[in-house]
Image 1 (tube, rainbow, N blue to C red):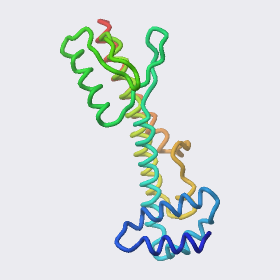
Image 2: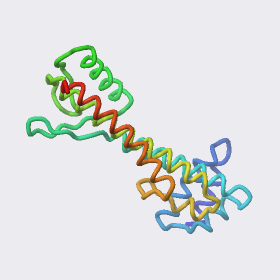
Image 3: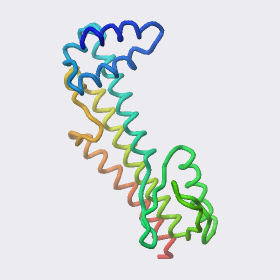
Amino acid sequence: MKENLKNLYMNGLNGKNPSTNANGLLKAVNKGWITIEDAVEIIGSDNSLEVIRSAKIAEISTACNTVIVSGVDLEFNGEKVHFNLSIEDQSNIANLFRVVELGGTEFPYQADGGVCRIYSAMEIAQIYIAAQALITTQTTYHNALKAYVQSLNSVDDIANVQYGMVLPEPYLTEVTEKLSVAQAQMDAIVSRLSGN
């Protein structure tokens, strides 16, 4: 397996991004096909740290995007409704919320795989807040995890970082503080829309 991956890596470097190829090697390490030492040997020890770091950052960015795009589930009148959060869907939900901000009391929208239905202003706010909460949580976590990866000076330590892991300090505290600010703002929106 190691020799096959080495050949793929070496042949893939012809005009291609080495961090992308290193990402494939990291996946092979995570699946147990090769060791981290094998990956370093394939990449070459002179630039392995930065290549592995770049590959790990690309990996966690992809994972963050996947979680966001997968969207959120909400329940309205006992019915579970799913909302994708692709860039287009994020824009549509933001525009939908803008209608509420401008005084709209209801508006039609189609959830993922559903039929178009009329959502009340409060339901639209719930959709918007759930979407923003997911986006903010994931991007804040991603940025902290990326900073953590950038602080590491060992290929093994970088390779062991996984999206979704509990952040070490001080990154965990920083994320918690930032998310509490975001939550306070979402609470203020709900309070304003509720007339309180």
